[in-house]
Image (cartoon, rainbow, N blue to C red; front, side):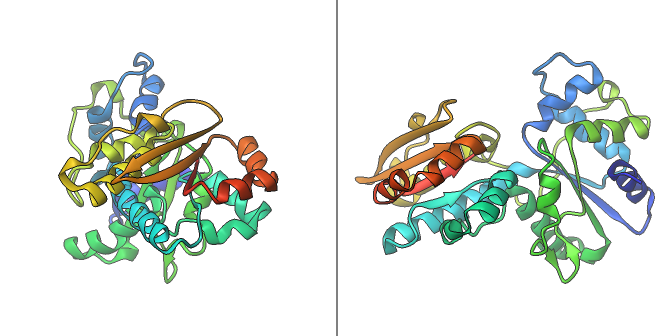
Length: 292
């Protein structure tokens, strides 16, 4: 049986309480699988279709992205204060994380210790939500719909579980999610639109930024600005936006300079880490490196 068949069987299992989380980019890309025009936003219809398929709750991964932003920002502020383990390396890309673990393990102490939004949401579902709903975590079947196939490997990492109960039970790509809906006889176009269920309240605009290049960095800087500047905090950091494979930016928050490098693609990441002279020079100047 494939992953689509596994999820299909779980939806028919009365002992399972099926919960689904959706990454921001999926709510656009899945529409083409059902004949929508490219770029059409089908969020509400997708939620309704997943509910019709048998999911008891459908959650927005952006809510967990907000939590990741707070934790990353807190960790960055702590490292800046202590002047230790800088630059902070952070990424939501499982492939980049695996690449550094396998090829550059000496940089592991620089990694941010926060889980990705997918795994943070899975952990919340199996703890906070399970207690709130008075459910045993072993009976919750948590499915995530993600744009990247490597998220499947992330969900199977040995540390992503509670005593043998995984944070995320199954990961579907956008195409696999469409296959599941079609297998269960559901057409996205005819589905009645519904709203996301809430686990911690609505996600912020910062959480939505995780779906764009450089968005994680901008969300993190919004939080740092809020912590250091309060009501006068900046909400836009256009300096970190762009599509270049490697770019640097400098921002001033509460009079303190924060220098950032944003790396897009494993080739550019390899170039940065193998060029020791460039990296160590940057290490004295760069406080945060985000790789997409």
